[in-house]
Image 1 (tube, rainbow, N blue to C red):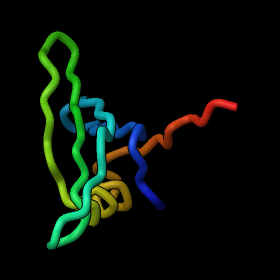
Image 2: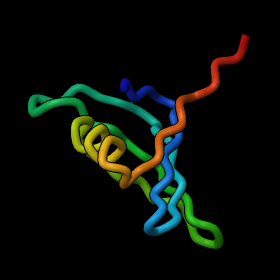
Image 3: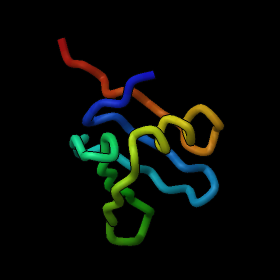
Length: 71
């Protein structure tokens, strides 16, 4: 599974919905920037390692929805 900018993430435990805003190269590996939104609250940004996000999706902690490409 490959993560891309614009993909959506959902965290069922906290009911946060997030969008991957960017993926940048870092000396320790790729870093994924996610903007999380929760109803009735301001959005907040987090930076997570690419491999950690992949592991969370694989383990079922996050639900991943790929970005829909327009024709």
